[in-house]
Image 1 (cartoon, rainbow, N blue to C red):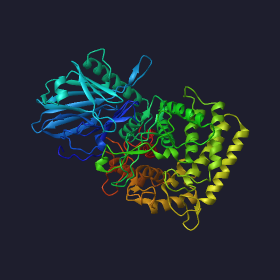
Image 2 (cartoon, helix red, strand yellow; image 1 turned 90 degrees about the vertical axis):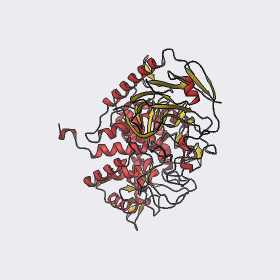
Image 3 (cartoon, rainbow, N blue to C red; image 1 turned 180 degrees about the vertical axis):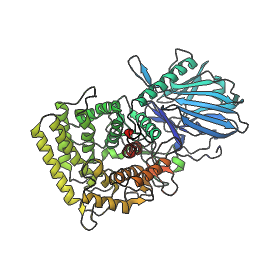
Image 4 (cartoon, one colour; image 1 turned 45 degrees about the horizontal axis):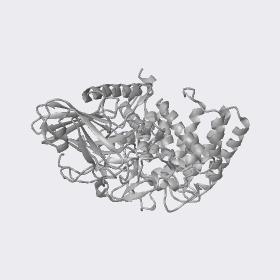
Length: 602
């Protein structure tokens, strides 16, 4: 194991809804953007592809055990607190506990951009080195280092970090090996002094952070079966929320390829309105309405700024509209598979499903009395402007949900979500006692539905297809069931499901499509499509098969229960950005659909 330096997605995640960090099996921090998710990756070794002992390698943070031969890693139960244990050939061992502080303080949630590492000997007399090497400007520059009696400063052009520690400061600066005879603490964060001893502060933060996560989990309405998997997915989804604005990122990384050497390397550290809707819906089903309320703040600002005009499919986490995409050459890429991209061209796209995603995300706010600020007529008026765009554009070409870069078509999935926008607006109007508006929106929904039934149906194939008057099968057709357009008893939907299954299934996994796009024919399965397939299988009564495939997907998670976007159907290896919120949403939804009822065992 110590000799295997190839990057992988066998990674843990810690975070506190301000920032996140990825930590490998050996306890090495290999990815962490600061001061927020879309910031400079001060720990960027995941995309650096360098040897651990290379004196010129920067961008990682490691507690290195001399003679390492074995590691263990786990989360403390029902928390985002990570524990890594390392052992040498003589049986000497250390335990590293990593966490990002998050807890209630002074009537608000305290979530500093701080990473705390507790390191203690657990067996024998281990010899360690602390290797703390932040890099700046996407790995292009090193920090200027200064220090005091119990801290070290790492100063870059845009950000300065400070580690405060009760370990010998000289040993940390010089990366000197030393015997670990007692626990040490490393408190890494902004360049600010602590007002209390570092071990006292960190222990207080540790206890409060554990209590916070366990209390949050305790209020989740989890299914009877697969509880550990659902809890881990829910905690990870929450860690992908940027609480300051309410945004929800698609993933914490950029440029992890969808498949080896594919060039499909994208920056996912932004808020796609499509992905965010599915995240809030999955967490709502678990009773976590706090995330919905926060996201609706973000969404309301976006809708107001659009003023009834075009909505982008993706925005920055602080409402930024320009996410100009560029390639950087200071990082080699995941396993050397560049390019590394920053920003995402999708902000320029027309993706008409976005209007349905906005309305569906907002729908619950009109009917759920648990919310601190339920939506009312003024909110409905703003939302109608979104619906107007959906109606106007429901049979207009766009880039589609798969974000094709060089072609446009009338995508069935986009028209489907335009239908969903009008359908839900009719329901909201009925709830608000506005019969005229309800009739208007119901009529528009019916009109769009008839267009879909006419233009998306292919008589020759006996199936709905991915584009109007097209002939390609697309996994997004499964969303007809997901958003309530078709029921499983619908003959056309049953035929479409059979076509999707026949065309796109590869073993126990699903491709999103199998025709060439801007980068050729996709190579790897798309995890959310497999979860859509499982849900429809169960709804069709093929429950035993659905459970078998779901169990297989659970086995495809990494050692800590996390998933990326894509999967190699031959090797089972995870690919694509990580942790992927869409994939974890699918896990939660399938677990809820397939689980036995509590009443069956109580």
